[in-house]
Length: 154
Image (cartoon, rainbow, N blue to C red):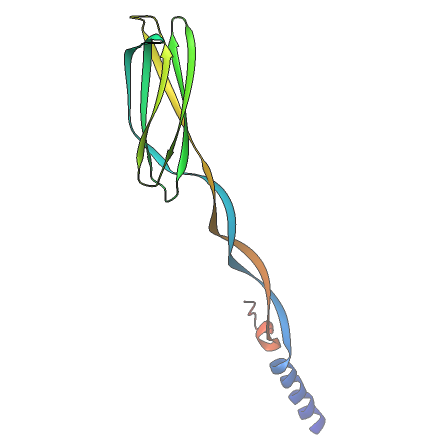
């Protein structure tokens, strides 16, 4: 009988004091360096025709850009002019501080009175920023053997 009691006491002690490793998944934050474009918005665009003393008749496109980011940025604007004579391109670059606006201008030679269409594309500069991202990782923890036998896994 004493042997049985001793055996039960040892079994109980093992169940209570012996740890087992249990794997579980956890969400973990980490910092990552990522490249992103500087935020902006086009606040206004307009077209006009005019006379340039050295070029003659010209088509002008103006694009006003606002830097809505917290860092300075350089914005490239590619202009495309289409006339009956073909397609012409121009480009301009403007550097803009956060919260400020600047105007980019594109220009093409045209014949006096000629119809034309235009389009433009704004390409902002990029910057490296630190972002907090999350990933799922497998970790281990120690639990008592009796808890593991009762189904506790996390």
